[in-house]
Image 1 (tube, rainbow, N blue to C red):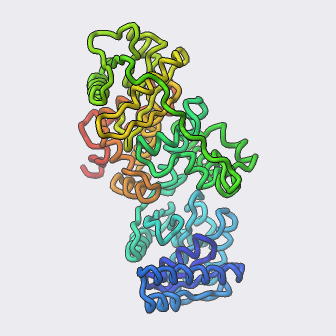
Image 2: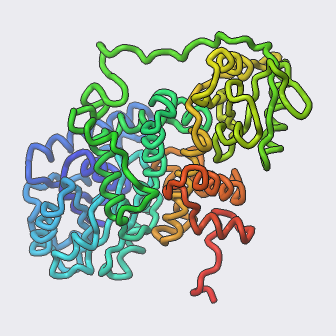
Length: 512
């Protein structure tokens, strides 16, 4: 296939390398001739590196470079061009101008694809004389390594175009997922679950960015915490995506932005690229403060309280503490000197104190989610005795014989815990994507796993917890906070009630 790529920036050159390596003839062009020269040089250096590392032969490198054709004029006639991929800046007027000029230069049979990440594909196509020839083809950077592409039909796109683009993408070795033309499409939309909830936790002073990031990595198993991720992506970019998706879905509560971001963006605290975001970067930046040492008494007696419905979680915590050699009390209530640990699930420690008649100064929450690595989370209420909190942390840090001690994060009491709220939001946002048929459930999990690097797809992640238990978590968060962002989704509710997996698309009226 002969392809023309318009835009020779980071995305355009990546798409060019990927397509030419797969055997396609690629015309690479830009309104700036120097950008095309730089892009070809960059692709050549990437191919040279591949040869040096033994991933490509010298002959394949030479053949790939022969298929990469620098083009001086983006609007040149191209009777043999079958596909155009536009990768210019994310601006509606710029993109519509590009396609308008291409429409006058290229045959009617040429398919147009826009690499937009946030603009309406239908809106871009509407400026064409023939809007049926355009669809979205959303790549992720770096294109050769991010093996996922979103195929986005516009409202007027001819029905044969999305399958043809899917075949093209998969023929080049990437996975293609078909996604509805909605704000953020699939992957950027799904990513709002993590960062919006992390910002909400910071708003509520549940923990500092470093605390939330450690818990996200060590309990949920994420490669990067949400604040590290925002600094890498750029807070200016993240904030714009959050706002556009929220506005596009008519201010949906589940996608609500934070008031924390506008001032930071205005101040230029964008992350790595500006030297400072949620963290400081560069040779002069101070090192991240280490976690405070464990200083309490690990031998202080501990009583594990089981709130209603949490008997299994309490038993598991009690068994783990006993195995570590902790002085675990038995009986109906704690002694006068014991610290009390409560496994919470969508509720707060404060509510457990009130409903269970527990001593407020000595009662703390523990997250029952199994940790990806050895970290536990201790939730502290405003009524906590600091000395008792230090002792509770020391008890939780104890390790069984032959094992490393547990790291213990101390956070402010909230409905659920940090990890529960992050996970609940990730699952809820993905469930909303499935509910709206933005993408098929079978595409949501692999796309998000590849695109965002999560250890599991969001629906599969929820299924590991269980639909009924996830519904219980969502209901408890909604009931405890009153915040509609935690309202249980129809997708999770129905599957819990019907005994279906969260990954199961179920029966639709069309099936009947």
